[in-house]
Image (cartoon, rainbow, N blue to C red; front, side, top):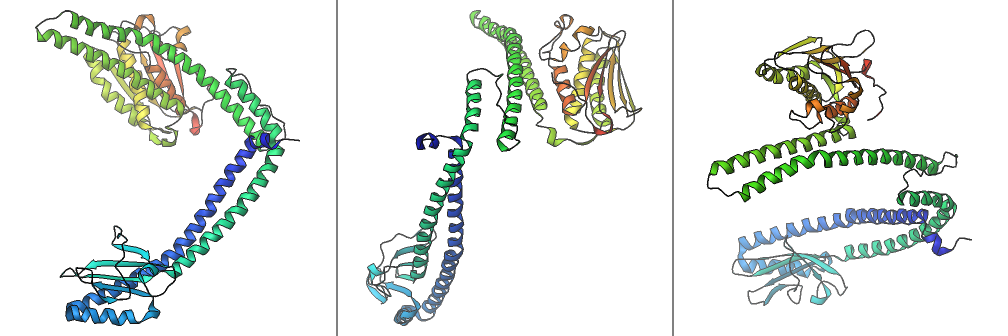
Length: 469
């Protein structure tokens, strides 16, 4: 027999209690809506009636002066069946007319309405009801109060509160009973999940939740948890690799940045140009660090699939032309020839900005590592012969050895021949992440000499089954 204390600590029981709390809250909200719909409507009607009475009294005052207003208030106060309350006083508080024995001490709210107990001021009846009234000051500092007895609203409120208490009490009892039944039936299977989670929390990420094979909700939960644990294990491994790479590759520029500033402080000089040069070098180093972190964020965003919901039909020639127009002057400055060949207007489902950034990164690498006088070809081909659209960038630079073509797609990986040039080793990683976001693949081949990189999109809008890096 399961003890009540142990049962109360189980996840199913707590979920049942949570559901009970939500259900009770829902019932309370429904009753509150019913109350506001009925009582609020009545209050609105009463408010409109009071407003009409006030307007009539104001007309009486403007037409017949104070004496006419006093007579009007006395006449209306004498009619008790209307449940109206009136009070007209002098600046000194002397009552001129009305059916209240004194001016209420309640403070008006921001909208000018006052709520007070009628019986305390000798109102239209001795019932312990409240009144809602509006007050204002007339010329000559005479004060006028016009309101209505709220006994009907008070009775409705009392009945709603009593009903709410009974409904909440019955709902709580039924919910607790149901929670006990649910907890007893599911406790053993939940305990198996708890054992697995404790094992994982202890640091063993290889543990998985057992499944009974029945295919019910708990089995589906176990399957989802296992899939989540697989993803967490992959992410933890990737995060550890990225952390190690960041610590290794950013240590040198940060140390260089600190040393430059420290040397400027140690070697005091009155020449402002020296300090200016140090500050310019420091800003350049900081810009390189910011570019590294920006690239890391872009890669993480692409790999997470956050942009997948923003994919739409894109004419692939547009990002290719944008990248070509951007880097053609750069190639000319380095004495290189950039040839753009667009052989069609293929349409892919993607993000135009990310595609333009990917092509730009590939062109930037080609221009960076191609010697002066070299030739770079940017080719866009449409779908043909069972394959999808393809963007190819070929150069006659040093190329990449075949055994390093997979490694250079990882973060912060740079070839020894490339370390003398500026960069952070994230360009190809970003291109690869953008390719996988679009269901495409990045192919690196020998251009004899040089390197040929192709961004190949699947045919008919499908996806390539490429394993994650």
